[in-house]
Length: 375
Image (cartoon, rainbow, N blue to C red):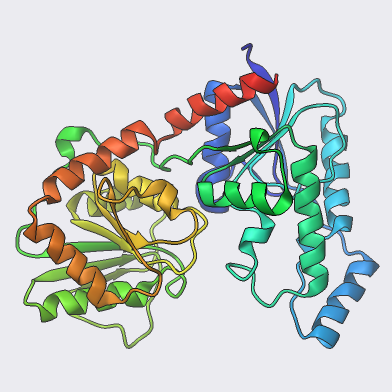
């Protein structure tokens, strides 16, 4: 396949690594490396339409529910018009987006491709709560239009892909699963990946949303391990827990910016020195941080929800427990792993899973294979 000219469409600045947990940035880099030349089409303007103001009022006053303006047909068409104006004077080969919103209503003869971690329907009553009937209708129409008009619909997990096929009745031949890779630039060498359990069991939690990411369960796990007489320590990165979360064996680092050299070094050090990555999320469309844990050979303990099962393979790079699981159950799983003396092999197989699947080079090769079929 020749190197393609790619119109890379986002509503925001796709070059900014701080947008969407860095995913749009790494996807663009992967396209550049394996598919062709990437041209960024983004920073789209948003406009207030009277009809949407009326819809919002109806949703709030009559239904007592919330309204998503980004999912309306008016905004979708407005985004599409901006994209069309930006691409009209260039001869691109494909339109590519890390989402459906900016390209759903884009009319073009070029193949449209998107790579997302979810679809609208699968987010209802999962991430999106108390949505008005108008927003639900608008959101599903936009998603259906994007799926019908795209040549290739790629999702990062089987969970999202299956929902797209089953709910939107999309041809399964154009729906593919390609997991995202780990968003790290300096992957450690295998020789660096030693996680000796000496002194205490070190748990690592990395997440901005304490509630959704299951921070309280991670804290409970620390307490339960200590109740069993096992010396343990929990490091929380990325958020500030409630004031009552306090323990001498707890370290809180409210924020680390991976774009800053010193912060990135510290985060890498934490991954290398920890024994388990623990994030019992209540909702998780994917979870790139689980891929990052695998890159460091760090076993994952998480929940059986959303897109996580595509990343975490039971007994290979970690274990998944039900969403309603409490700290005592995660503590028991840790004790079981330590008693079975399979911790070291779990670390090795975690890194192997990263090397084989959870990296951007593998993603790029799979992406190239799928795009070749439609060009």
